Amino acid sequence: MADSRIIGFLGRAISHEFSAAQQYLAQARLTALWGLESESAGFRKDADEEMGHADMLLTRMLFHGATPGGTHLAPVRLGRSLADLLLHDRELELDAVRLYEEAMTYCRRRRAEDDAQLFERILNDELEHVREIDARLAAMDNRSRSRG
Image (cartoon, rainbow, N blue to C red; front, top):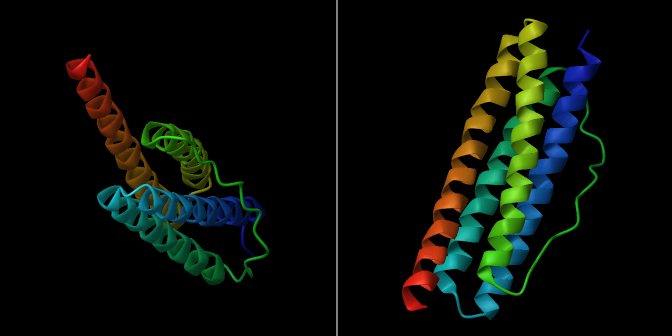
């Protein structure tokens, strides 16, 4: 019988990944409207990555014999500038980091190594995404300082 807490982590993670994909798709459309085609393409790439995570999580849930239920999607958070969008994305990614760290730790304690490895893999992707966002924000800050 599947561990109900692991199933719960998988369900929360799926909801998070769908929420993130929705946010990145909305940001892709918004930045396209602003004429920021490169940023728009980057947000579409981010959405695809989040959907890939959701696919892996759904596969694992089905492996456990659980049926993915309805997900609760977080509201999309937009802004008036690219920096605003990135700050919201950073918050979203840090929420994911906390979720995956907790899930991985629990799975390791339960000796559910396959689940722990999945959560760790996605955790590492999310940590890399936070680093990328931080680098983009720092570059934007440096450009604004050099102009000022």
